[in-house]
Length: 172
Image (cartoon, rainbow, N blue to C red; front, side, top):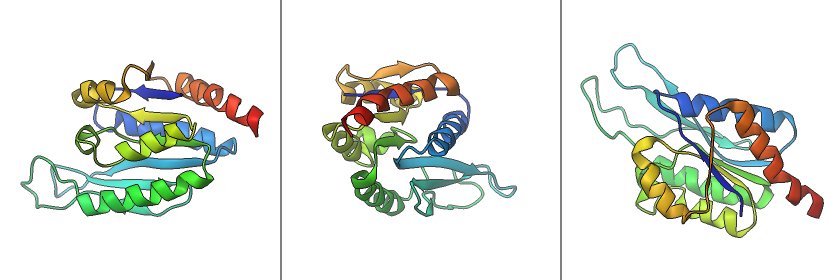
């Protein structure tokens, strides 16, 4: 089982790192499934809009709800997230690798992409997950001691991804 995670502090830092890694993997022809998040700052809001790019060739999906300029706290649109989960689950059939932008509160509670991660691992696909510090304990519990921590360095993450893919390539 190939499961790795990267954690990095700073708003949008994990998203930027995973976007860079995904771009490199795609340029090398890897067939990916999963999600990559981008945050869109707005001058009239304290909080950004959150968009998911659904891999490999899916739409961009807004997963945040605009609750107004004074909004604080969770703004996740659970319906948009669940549609993204369904898309990602279906994309596993054509993939050789799964990338999940964030193991967040939904995943910690057994929802969101938690089932998709488990399905990918059952199929023998390598999985790369972004995890923030707040959700690291639930992720480690979910992973059951089988996840490998990667340094928050794009080159190191890319190297792991390519190495994790090699056994699958030999079997093909």
